[in-house]
Length: 411
Ligand code: AAL
Image (cartoon, rainbow, N blue to C red; front, side, top):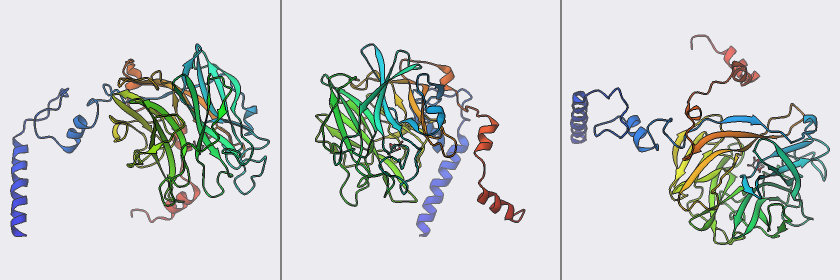
């Protein structure tokens, strides 16, 4: 024990005296990691990120938002909702997006009041609709892509949260197929798919579960959400999210399932979950690997992560005001050839659009610079300021205020 302590003292004293002799860290930030002893923070600055400043970090960006034109929300009374946009593709000279569309007599009423026409949640009793646009700002709603099939087929209760794949001349839509009212136990469902020769359909349901829930006791035993396919190394890499750990401390993480053919069989990666945080899935080919936007939930929310093999993700940037459920336009989603170029815009959703009792979601556009082909210095600034009103809106609740006021001053 005494020897151990003496050894520790020796190492500590040596590195301390070494550090004492070090010249000061230079005023001009070295572009490359300097060959000298560094603090943990400065080591990380050079080792963890693609560049030591956010301005040069290709995976750092601000997010700017624009309202969309072309969608009607029935005066925001909560009966119409659009949410969870897919990634955006360009086909037939226009942009295409798919999304969850709910048009119900009343806004969501919770699982206990739900019935054949009353929705439990914002994505209950929904269909998958699509819209097209020439510029990404003005959209023309085209109508239904996938309607609910008859009971007992997968998705009879609701079809939601779609994403698109183009593979060998055919289009594939993957989506959540609810066979029970969402919220009864949890938000439980598997993933199914439909295919078509054109993005305008008609869509043929494959009538089967494509990504099944995990076995009893597995992290993804109850829900497979947000299916998100990309082509990577010639295979279909489908990322998905699951809720686990049980209420009230629900954890959301993402897993990966890989297949040679769009309708499977999909093999789940044994290391799943491959992202420990986040909510809806948003990923894109980047350089040789895959980048992921990790939003809202978990220890690592508000980060952009990168995995050169699409599996072992590391934090590449810390960001703020991220788009929720982002569906980016990814020109090379299915054809990146190990040279992913990144993204500059997409659609996302705002789930708190309606006032109390009028709950619904709306779609909006986000812009960013997470692209190797764009260099927009406005997107690379840090510290986006929000108005005082927004901060005060995020105020203490009654309980917290009471607790604080009942505390003895000075303690
Ligand atoms: C989301 C997604 C999935 C969930 C619900 C609708 O935004 O993660 O789609 O099931 O909420």
